[in-house]
Image (cartoon, rainbow, N blue to C red):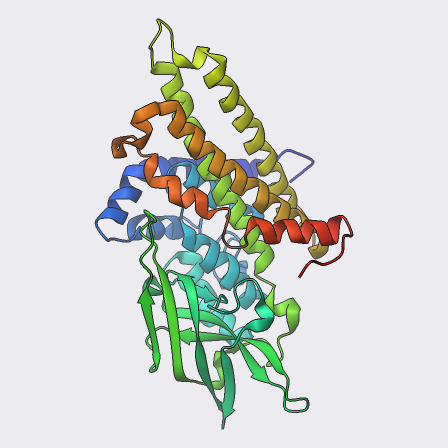
Length: 386
């Protein structure tokens, strides 16, 4: 990315993904959700075309690009009406952590499947009593010979039913101090003692949420990714990419909603001219366009800073982008529904189904309040509030 203009390659990637998205669209996405199916066809085609693996290193079957390339794929699919939550989780979080901290054998075992779309991995950090406070994580792993034994639970974990493995954030006991340290484990979803339960969500999506239970799950030594004492750098390695991806999906959703609203405002004629001619309709839509572009620029800035290795600045930009994109997505879907009037609440117009999903962008993967806490503390130098 040079200045405020994306590279020719990035723009070409966006166009190619846009074409793929149009092939499927919201009707495909909603049908899969309503019929209890997954977006298998779209995911597989995106993988075969190399879109899911754009940020995976070339030596492991990927495109060798940056997180900004993967974010562009995520944004364009969302803008086409197919917001794929597992793109945030599988190639972005798990792929980044394994590429940075996995052994050579682990990279060769787990990254090629991410790159071609044949493998999907979930990520689990949130716990019922931990939430945003990762210091309260209670899932523990203890050594038993050369094995690890995992015990605990997680909640609001996406796509476990589609994944072969879950990257689990647990804690191990430091042999010297006795203190619990964070550690990451790749846990097969068919492991003995690992069970999960679907959470009944008011969300129209093929991708489901789950509560996980680890009842003395035995894992081999090489299930550990990175160091036994992972440290915060490894624990949070996937969080900047996660926030960049979440911001991209939110801005894509906002673009999708705005496009539908604008199209309706151009064709809906009540007083002898399209309703879009009235400032009460036009100005909110114009304001949305401005806010979406601001969120996109922040997201692109965060991705560029991350690619340059400036992680502190990338963290600031990623939090701001995630906040701005979540606000834009909520406002865009709400205004699109308002523009449609009563039709906005009719399922045939495809907007009301996205109301809960747009609201989710303010909550996950980090709440807007925690994003503002970050900005208050690190950008403004205000005292820590928690």
